[in-house]
Length: 387
Image (cartoon, rainbow, N blue to C red; front, side, top):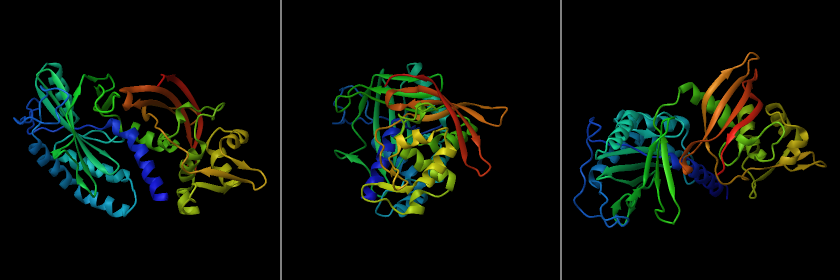
């Protein structure tokens, strides 16, 4: 049961993150040179008879180079997972992104800057100039590397995906390398440096957006986000809407789980073992209250309204899988050090599935504690658009 739940968690996170995947492939350093197109007619090109068909042999050969460059890390991830789900660590993602970058290709993972991003910028410039052009960005998520092949030819823009799944190999569709070709009806670059695309009703009747940050975000911005913002568990919760007056819209169980690790440097599983079948873990009141009351500007009444409390047993029941859905990916775009030693972070919520790099903005103010933990002092939502 636990293994299944962990896998579901990974799938939920992937649902948030997969929208930000794409990639860039060039046979030479000349950004205007495109990969040769196959003269064969693809049965996958059912959306339009005129869409170009990529040279699948060339793509697969280069993709194999990427996989070989990452093989040591991939093998370590698969070995650690065993017969269960195990997401790569930050260092493992970084190793794969760097290995792909060293080959000269753009590589995308939401928490790292894209190497060779200049090639994506050149692709965008060629597209704006009306030139035929093609690019592939290698994207990493969970247990896979994805290659999204963007082709602009004869004023038509198309996307074709290819996937390498760790421990399984390349994903083949109808005997072909990658997924069917899909038409893109809009491609745009934002002022912030995100390249987005829109696919109208590709398979199931619903529109699809995709995109990735091309222009690098500052290393300090990313480090601050990892330390202060991601600890609030943006995935499967709504931390951007909390305030001292209202914690009702966030999942306090999930937030407790994240903050427990931040305070104790151990996971709940390390201390209390794996959760029961229903994933509801009873914990002493003093354990929960120490973490939550010392980390957040929350009252005892608000805490007990958010996590079930048994007064007779003086215990809370923490639901270790009470999430669901997805949340925008946080991005620290500005930060300010205050006179009292606190730090105010301006955070944009990036919503790739909606083609939006600024779905909402909040200002989070934090203070470092002497023991290395964090005190979250306040949160103010300054902008929030409807879903």
